[in-house]
Length: 148
Image 1 (spheres, rainbow, N blue to C red):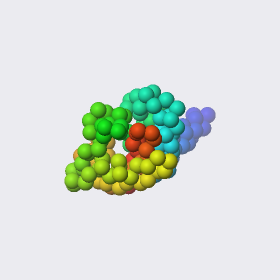
Image 2: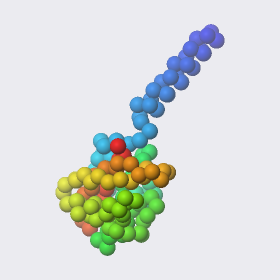
Image 3: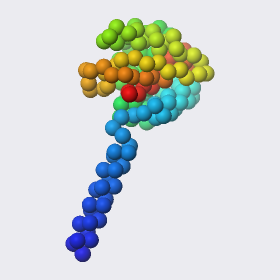
Image 4: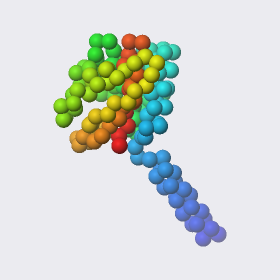
C-alpha cells in the first residue's frame, strides 16, 4: 500500500511539473492578443473601471509578463502597472527608440497592429525584443506586449 501511495505521489508531482512547463514561464503572442481583445471589450463597456482594473492587474489583466497598458489623448498612461500618469507618448527605450510615439502612430480604431521594440522584461534591466499589439479604443491607445 505504501508503494502504491508513493507511486501515486510521484505521478501527481510529475503532472504538476508538466503542467507548469506547458503553461510557460512567459506569455506568448496568442495570449497577448487575447488579453488586448479582452481589454478592448472592457474599455468599451466601462472605461473608468477597465482602466483601474488594468492598472492594478485585476480581473485577469495580469498574467506572468503580460499586462495591458493604455494612454490617453494627452499622451499620458491611463493604465499601467507602474507608470500610470507618466508620459506614454514620450516613452523612449534604452536604445533611443521612440516606443511611445511608435505605439501612438500604429494605433487605429477597429484594427490591431503590431509594434516591435527593445524593452526589458518585468524585473530585469536587460532589453530584449518585445512585440506589442496595439489599437485605439475611442480616445485610448491600448496595447499588450509579449517578449521573444
